[in-house]
Image 1 (cartoon, rainbow, N blue to C red):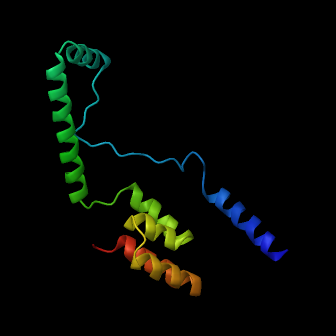
Image 2: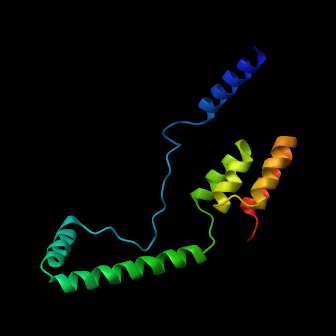
Length: 136
């Protein structure tokens, strides 16, 4: 009976502090990006459609190269993001899951976090926060 009461109380507290509207993930927009108007977009689409097949393939290859370069630059830049905030919240609730999502694989850090969480919850949380917020 106590266990059910604790579960209900925890769900109540979660619903009290987490508003469904504020729980949405908001992607940051770069300061230097300007959203084009619909006329510019339509002109670009028609210009792309008027290209020959070879030119379209060349443009698509260029775009793919730019996307790869952008992802590499973003990966090299170690600024905290909304993902870090979500991982910190998850580290407080489920430390091993947060470590797994941060590392991207099941490795020794995951197993240490799982062991610490199973033995004592607080050391697992502290270790998960160190892994997530620590400098790699």
